[in-house]
Image (cartoon, rainbow, N blue to C red; front, side, top):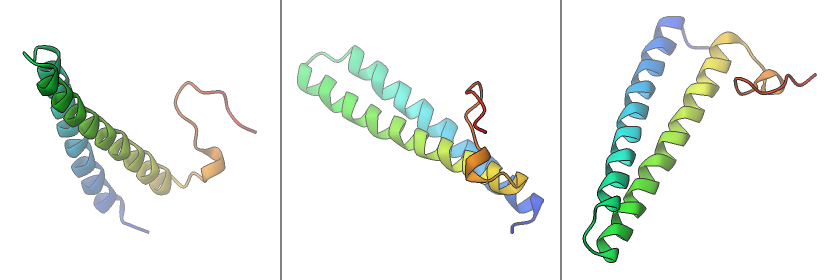
Length: 86
């Protein structure tokens, strides 16, 4: 099991990557919305989807890391706001 300080560094590195991926995804989406041709817009939307998918994978990785460091089991991990599973 990683030390809390190691997990903190891992989490902060993942969080930085998550913010970068969200920013890039949003920027590519905005570029697609103002593209002058449909081919250019399609290319921008594809790149936006890539970065937003990456952001989702990073968000999941942070969630799993948090669960491991707090000792939650898979059955006890719920998304915030979701009903508790008993």
